[in-house]
Length: 515
RNA sequence: GGUGAGGUAGCCAAGUGGUUAGGCAACGGUUUGCAAAACCGUUAUACGCGGGUUCGAAUCCCGUCCUCACCUCCA
Image (tube, rainbow, N blue to C red; front, side, top):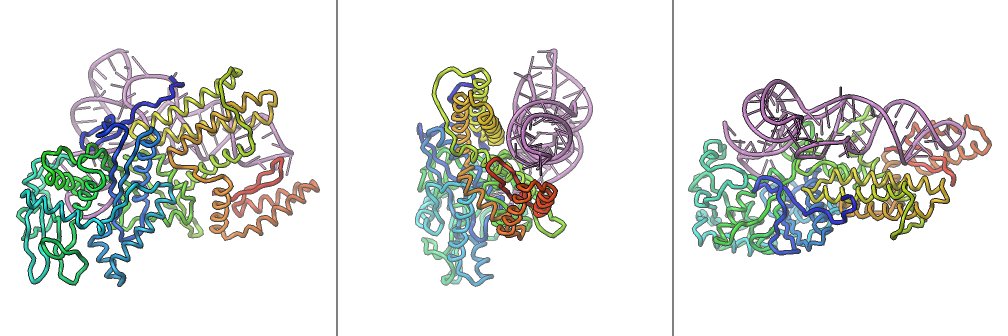
């Protein structure tokens, strides 16, 4: 069982079908994924990072299993929030959204998210959007409300004319009506109807359309973009739980009404949970958000990614923010994750210069056991990921592999006679470690680079210079040579007070900054 | 009011019927001039509460309490 090399089939939670089900693909060997990306009016916060990491993980797991993935993540670069923000600062809306889109890309790349296959923008999809709206109008699923005083007209979706409305979010239109607190727009036939196209004045930010100048409504872009790059009936549609209603519900209505008789818009719907601060959802409107940039100023990007990965993507994450006595802000959860990243890179660094071996043949029992534990850990990691992206178990398995690796590296020093066997176990463990880390999207650089970048960051945060530390370390080396241990310990104590830890190894003294 | 998510040891966090998840913290050991790191071991008889089903429940059923989210923009 533990030696079974093939992980079980992938299954994921489907909001529409309510539950975890095996992935049933439209086309064998290929997966189409559409994920709702950001509205680019501001920099990304940890909640955005979570969504991106969750579905980057999905794509990595799918690809690891040999599936050919087309991954589309849109950029909403046309929106009233962008327009309003731009008005405040005097920046052109297009310039603002282009700038924010770039920052988003940079942030997501920093935390190990691969670039999607396509990153379409609303501003570059206007003809397709107009085409979908046009179909809806022709199908009588939408209606036009002419504009006044030279402004373009509006187009609204006729919600009650779409029988399946509410199937994703579990709502029914009649119950919603009583609970709705929407300001009633006189021009709509029904309060539930939503805008596909919003007319604007001739000079305003907008595009020409059959209904006059205007901008697309919020939901229509995803219908147009997914159709453009993936076609109707693609495999997985992903996004945050807050998008289930109304955004995703409306996408379904639009797309299925625009392409009647062509089946479901998307086969499976995956939604990630929220990041909370003090039990409340992190969000722009509440003002309780921490940006990705805030975190990366204090922590390594891989620490943020690991922190996100050890929480199951559908559950809530509590994001802790602590203020130290000296006023410094820290993120304890991210710090802990960073110490684990330290551990993993330190383990990998020990492999440097090590000769490993792979291949068949009998091993002494202790080493055969270690080898099968490594294989079991690998299998568990992949099996857990296949079961609705159980990354936490994969990380736990990764720690176990690293522990075995360290154990073997210790033994390698002590038991020279066993080195051939040890090299075999190390070879297998190294392989498993790499494979699991790659699927998770962590440990993406070399230990040397990781250590130098984190050292620089930590020293900068402490306001301590590297030269200063080096000088003290050198003093202590001299003291130890002279067997003046009292002085050596005093220097060590002093460095410790600064946040610097020392390690007296066989090759000399090395140091690192504590996290 | 409707819909959904969640309540697991000091803390974080997996687990959805039956042998230890894992991490942090703590303690002991190997190692070390002493430490640190690494490894090994120990520790908590944990599952919001009350019933029920079962040989057996954190896990299924019924009820109940609490937290959060969505129903308006939101990852």
